[in-house]
Image (cartoon, rainbow, N blue to C red; front, side, top):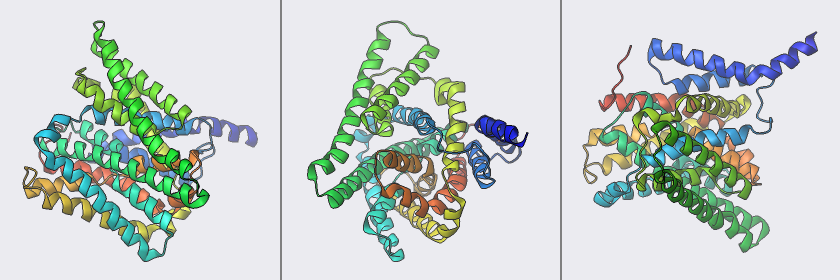
Length: 395
């Protein structure tokens, strides 16, 4: 009887935890107006803490499903990027690139205080550059946020993610070169992956809008086509060992330029997007080992402080040059606090593709990831509310 009960619990673990996460998130949002994604993460962490049978990342297909969920968010983020804005205000583009590089350098330097190996310091620094599109976009959509700070945060988040992927692929190439001495393998592991991922995403970004223009497609149909295209792109990226995250972001940017519009009602990809969002944040939380969280908490706190100071400082210094006030620059930097979902999946994807140090890095960064998972979306929410660009009031 006990064996049958354990098997039943193992079979229903994931849907049970996701259902609980949804109810908790709705209750917490109504009671305290905290971001729903924070509650999803908290429930996932609790499931991992009590070692709920069946809530394991060893189940085949879970990493792929998580990448589909994040790829949908990255497509939407890319779709909200206006390349013309960079031409009219190049300071935003320059700020995004410089801030990314400064964050990379500062984090690499601070990691040296803990006598970590060079390759591990490089990986941690590359991941720390990123801002979590899942956290930022979900919170912005939840608040129906729109305005100068919101648009700047979305554009800088996209730049951070792009630079983070490029830096990590360079680190992967460096690791292959140092371990095998084969420059061809090293180049294939970095330049090829980045270039081909961008090319595949760009090709789909041209082809799908062209197909949609060949016939009159209603708004719901446009959403379904884009969702299926992201699924196709993620599947192809897995088969070719490319970066589905970079490809999805490129797909969204190029599709936006082809002038096929998504309405506000279609953001988050409807009910399917909501379901995948719950799964994504529960899954990300389940990847963290509580034993690693305790040992890496001091490093995590320090890295969070340094990373936040870098992003806030750069946005403050460049505020007037890029056309906003110092207050809005401060809020922009704070809104870029979340990073965990994108960073963890990027790291997990590298592990699946044979990058050995990825497992070790996740253990070292567990404390940082935990705090960023729980608190990052709250900081973004409060920053956007302080900017007075939200259109949802506390109910």
